[in-house]
Length: 153
Image (cartoon, rainbow, N blue to C red):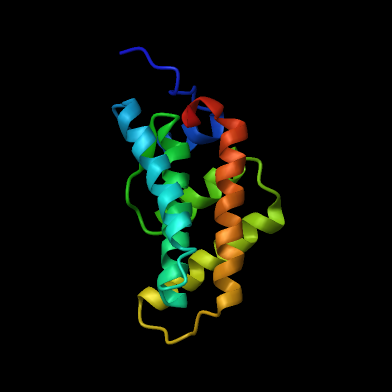
């Protein structure tokens, strides 16, 4: 099947493929669109005030993760599931989307916070943290639209 969405792999992704941190996938456009749809829906749903701050924080984080997976997917790759793959995927997506370092750092910090909560930390999530993460999610979607415009058609 010929597709307009599948992109060439840059050298840095080839190195991660060679090292076993990423794996080749059989690309199909539906899956690429599903990852984008999940990202947009999760970030949008995180704006729903009826949910608790923790729930909204997790939704926004899942949206960013889905978009990050989608960015790799557009290059015919996904993570192999090694320890730390979630953070690696987000870092790579931020790089591919040309996100400034300070915003990438904020996304990575939010992911670390999510991991702490997931594994039993009672660290609270403040509404301001949720709002910041939602803003970052919206920005990442906007950046993806600029870098991969065909993905949004």
